[in-house]
Structures are given as structure tokens and as C-alpha cells.
Amino acid sequence: MKSILIVDDEVDITDTFSMLFELHDFKVVLASQGRQALEVLQDFTPDVILSDCMMPLMDGLELCTQVKSAPSTAHIPFILMSASPKQHDLSSVRYDLFLQKPFVFNDLLDKVTALLNKH
Image (cartoon, rainbow, N blue to C red; front, side, top):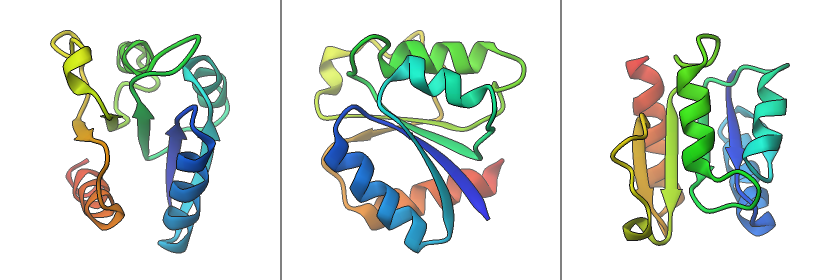
């Protein structure tokens, strides 16, 4: 069973994605912001991380930077998503995929599956 860590401060998004990924046989773990995600990563190593860019306390860009700079988590594929990508400077962030919100779940599932098959 593949696992995914979904990081987003919007409960509707995490609940919906959680339900849909679970229907496709993923183990899902949720975090509402970057600091909480880092705490989760101390005890759990997901196969992929899906994170919103804009969140309180620690945004997705900082989370991605910390995940990719730590030897124990650098190998985890990291997907960033945002409704407003032009507000973010992604040039210094080592993410694996960027998705513009809104998107169709089946497209997301296809991209996650392709990313997992690459790794």
C-alpha cells in the first residue's frame, strides 16, 4: 500500500483528498501546516508528499526546502500545489511537481502514480 502525506490548512481539501486517495488504496496522513508535517515525518515516511504553498506558521515552500535538505527525507517526491502560483518564487525550491489549483482528482492521481513509478 502506498502512502501520502497531505499538507493543507483547508480542511475541505484535506478531507476530500483523504477520502479519494483512500478509495485508491493509499494510506493517508494529514497535516494542517508545515511544522506539523515535519513532526509527522519524525515517525512516518510517506511515499509522496502533497502540500499547499500558502499555509500559516510554515508554508509549503519552506516545508519542501526542509524535506529536501534532510538526508532522511530528501528522496520523498514532493508535489506543491497553489491557486496562485505567480505569488511564489519557486526557483530555489527542489520540488518534483507543481499543480495549479483547481485540478481534477483523476489528473492528480495519474500524476502521483507516475511520480511514484519513477522513484
